[in-house]
Image (tube, rainbow, N blue to C red; front, side, top):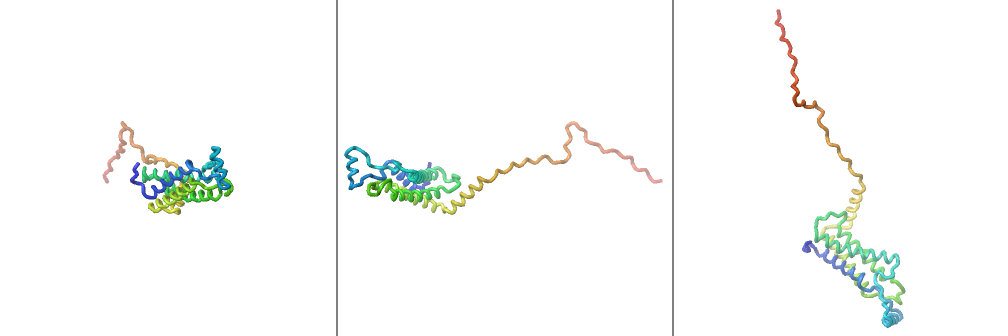
Length: 208
């Protein structure tokens, strides 16, 4: 693995992926602290954690948003690994385009999680973790886009690559071509056979 192959885009995206994963699993995204912080103070007094992490108490839509965000973090780190391992890895679609697209999707999902909180705004407050996740998602989107610029790849190119890959996979396999048979000339004589001799003809008679 040669880290000297990493360019600015891959480095920024990978760091953003690490920041995003840490934000998803290590920090609270929300805090139940309504009524002027009385709920938070009461929770601290009785030893109850009033913080809500990214995966706590999420419904179906929240889980889908988390999966998009998680995929962006993994894709960003994978982009750096693929780049550092080999620059000639054949992929059906440019990895930088996939990372940039997922990064943009992650930014949108985090913003939606900020707007649609798991409870009324009067009771639930945003915490440090969700802002850290937004920063990480933005780094992934920017890093993936910068990597696309370095490679000269666009989203249109990635779409064409995807269509070509799908068309190739759907095409029926080519039938094997039968090897050409021996020429249809006379078979060579078998060993031990005497060569054919021409029939002798009598000499012509002289004219009287």
